[in-house]
Length: 81
Image (cartoon, rainbow, N blue to C red; front, side, top):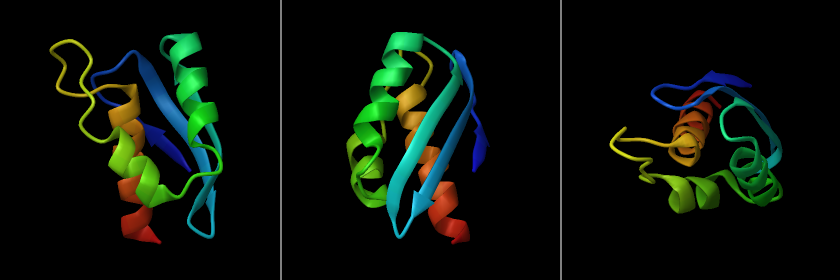
């Protein structure tokens, strides 16, 4: 699934989920080291666990962050599957 991010340096998150588990995750744009780290940490974890862990993380005064955007993307995925 492709998710267009909002108010972050990353522009998009591409991810796959199988049986409720994140199987791949890649951020397009953003701080490469941080987004690669987040992506690696979420692979193999359940969608619900990732949402609980990342939701609400704030970057500066943006009201969101790349991790928070991933939580939003997974919530959108969950709502449609």
